Image (cartoon, rainbow, N blue to C red; front, side, top):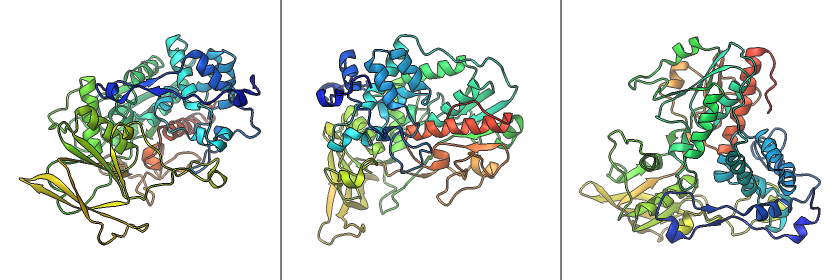
Length: 485
């Protein structure tokens, strides 16, 4: 590394946020980038450790530390420190098609596994990654990479989330004719319709789509594959038209809460609530769906994960009176035991930017009943639970609520329509069965990657699986592949 003693001389300095009062006025991104000097100083802290766990393992199997796409983090840190930003961008893009996505919304397992995290001062890897790719876009370095030769093979990619986009881009660069089928009006999947604009503005997706179109990818919008919706495409007919098919949709079946009062008005799944606001911001119509709005309401979010956090931030920006977040798990420890957890991702108390905007967080809480008046929810009946989720007598309480958002995760992809018509085998969790070696499903020439294969997961995992699925499809079509992992 260029600055051998950087980690001893320079303190960790992370990006700051705009004040809460200011950022709640709109849905714009509110992270304040570091200056060029500060970013280079942070890159200088990378300490040339003997085993850089931040890379992740070669297999990046679930549960292993570091980066799922195996970013060459010490290398691009050094390039930034040496002021060679363009080469840093080339290095970063050699493993990650969309670092502007991960630089904004990845939880950064790389930083958890950083050697400097042993004393809670990891290198600001996510900040540096975002700075590299944003500079690359600003300087026009990210040109379309058009294949020199076409293979004559055609591939259909079903779903345009991060797995589908990564798969499609890699296949187009290998010279295949790639068609992406998306049931909604625009590409991006949960990146566009689930992640709020205050975390990632959608022009970030649009410029990648434009790059992919220039590389030869054709996007077909408003084209659901399977099911009975108007204009739906028969999956079996689609499979006949293409040399290979990649199933890269999401895990869209939400976990429900079937308790008394569930049918009251004002109780909604998070993914009925969040996409509406994203469509409002972009000017996309709601197609007649009734508005779900938090303005002037006491809001309760059930579920303590990222989706719940997104509901909190969106509710506050819509003008909610109050937001309470309920989590059935007990409160995690404030600090992890490094000797036990490092370099793996630790279970510890984390507060998201949205939670810090004023949400009340309640842990070890079970909702037992919804109560309402005139057919609308007005109250939740709750109870504290022990470590086996058994109710603790005498801890019952109620919460006022005019809007309840269920953000308890997703159980598996939707089975009706596409998957049942194709007849692909499912695993014991209800996801599409496809192994990590070749991403092949039980049906000939049909592959699967991302959340549809692995269940709900991180954007960075979707990118990795999309890239590896593209390698497998390229090998299937051509007998070999030159695509990088």
